[in-house]
Image (cartoon, rainbow, N blue to C red; front, side):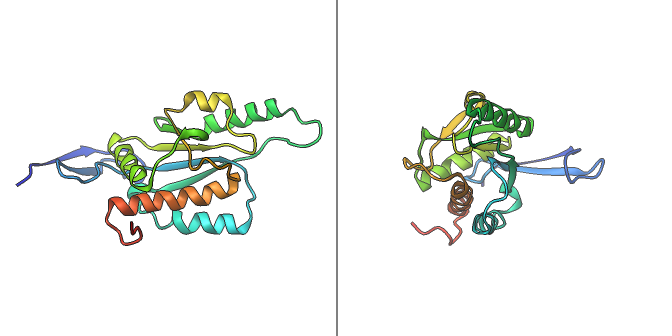
Length: 191
């Protein structure tokens, strides 16, 4: 029989009434330790309907223990005469301000590390066990600002291909759902 530890702590966080108790069960089994919010912080708004629908399809499938939340950052001015360096810097500042306190930050970059589905699932398990929420940063057409790259604890590449940033939202949501499905032996993922 495996040892189980049950602890009751006062909880003042989101969704809890004052004095509400949070019961935590921990064991040395292969179970995931805690819930995690995933904040997808992405440059761009007013996406085509197919992007919004595709993203929502997978985001809503994820359970509360691994909730995916989209934070859209308005893109800076682009076009004739635009100062792209300044635009990138301004977008980066807004992205950094949007990161909830205490989050692990992962930058999505072409030069980042790529993972197989199984490796992503294992990475998600480590992220969840870490006890912190996760912020995934997706830049605009010119990528991420240097300040965003500098604050990232990890860099992740979805593909060696350059992908349009609207498509990245859909792909990320699907892959996160697939990774969670694999962790939970859910029938969605069939290897």
